[in-house]
Amino acid sequence: MRVALLTIGDELLAGDTTNTNATWLAERLTERGVAVRRILTVPDEHSLIKSRVCEYCDSFDAVIITGGIGNTPDDVTISAVADAFNRDLVVSEQARIDIIETLETLSDTVPNLDVDIDAEATIPEDARPLLNTEGLAPGCVVENAYVLPGIPSELEAMFNKVAEEFNGEAVSSFLYTIKPEANIVSALKTAGSEFDVSIGCYPDRDAGHNRIKVTATDEETLTGATTWLQDQIDASDTPVERDWAEDIEYDQQN
Image (tube, rainbow, N blue to C red; front, top):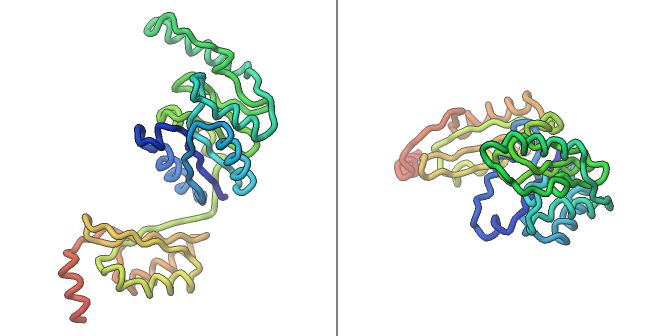
């Protein structure tokens, strides 16, 4: 399963808010064997959101869209998604009832909330509403587009409701080696071609090792590749540390 993440918000592009949602979703999807193939952040611009939703929904199995739902002037995501699928906006009765119930529970602690309930409960016609257990505005599913809130606690709770709809065959494993990156390139290329796996190498100077991620489509292939690499580049499946200068001198002498 190939998925794209579309995170929306001027505040993300300005650096006012850290885009933790993209990282969190990518981690959860990868854990489920899903291949995340795009992560894009766009501003709160209706036409741009619409065009990217159209493009990504045609190109990927699913698109997760985060942020810009609600009833403030910059919340244009729902209307942009509706336009992308040529659908009208309608009030979801299920979401409307849920919002009313939520407001009732908040009435003692936050009295006199002035909420436009119908506006909050508006989603594209025939979309599947995703009720917001941590807030007010619902998310929704329109064909292969999943619209989620931008507030992390709300997003995480809502994604967990639909997580079972995201599954893939990819399996991964991490290896660690103290050998310099330049000294292991040949082995990494050979492993990639011989075992039909994808390999990423991520130097970590603070930890004193290279972290290698091996990804395959089945456990047998993954085991074969990682076992071979462990032998070829003196890698471990647990983090190891060593002084870089000492290691370079060691390799030159051997």
